[in-house]
Image (cartoon, rainbow over all chains, first blue to last red; front, top):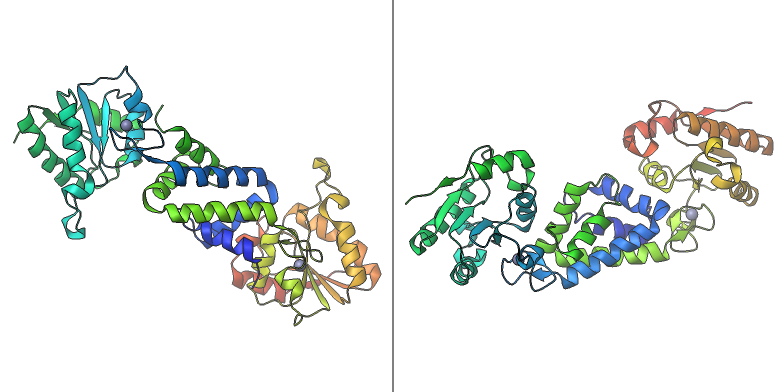
Length: 199
Length: 199
Ligand SMILES: [Zn+2]
Ligand SMILES: [Zn+2]
């Protein structure tokens, strides 16, 4: 017995954050209580609103509280170029390279062993987006892992017959890594060095 | 431009947490949104309640939403032994060693250059607590830093004339460290090896 109930609840709740263990959660809770209550209140409100109101962009399926995300709503982007990623955080990573085409965000990668097939990761929505769009090229920017490669290959087989040029990010992306942990320069290089996929 | 406004606000708000930079805040925000919205809502509520309702224990001045904290409310503790620490997190650290006396929590350490004198860190409240209590020994468990030592010395000069035995945690606490980063074994050793202070 040591912390009062509300402080204990706060410490427990902080532990849902990735990478935050008991000791870190304690420091976070006490630091906010001792030094930054208004910051803690702002965080509480930002969390409550985001958890409640953020949904998915109707067009690219990234996380977003509006009908269209900032990337889809922007009229000045290249409508012939589609970048397919497997997570909203990857949109941010690719944006940092200066890419200014459109996006489609899968819900992760194909994972047959976990029962995650094409429907589960949003392939029907991807096909719908391609059908209503005017894309000439699709860049497959799924993670450079075995599952990411398999997902890219699966999508290539669906989209090449529809007349699109398909490419895969290539040079510089380390194997077995996660896309959003790659530095911007490496990712820019990988985008520039993308290779066309043939069946 | 990349994340929608609510997600951007959440990422900014998460950065008030100690040790959380832009990249970590992004991962935290997106992971909660994608995988654990109910955990995010619980965190929002725990934060709002704690920031709003947690005050200070009337007796020991630790963070607490009740009038008395769990340590002060417990009738089975040793009322002759007072442990003086400089932060609520230190109460938790000392509790882990098995200490079962009472506490008094200062608001940090004396810092004349920052204008933090005896009133600012709660010395008058400490004297009040000692006057109304029945302590025979006070353990000075301020941090083993120059400021913590100076604060301990200042308190010793006030309390020894009141007939208390004053001791300072000693063996095993590394110089220049922070008390709550010390492992429990080292701290238990430091408590056991405390030394009486004479003027
Ligand atoms: Zn969108
Ligand atoms: Zn108390």
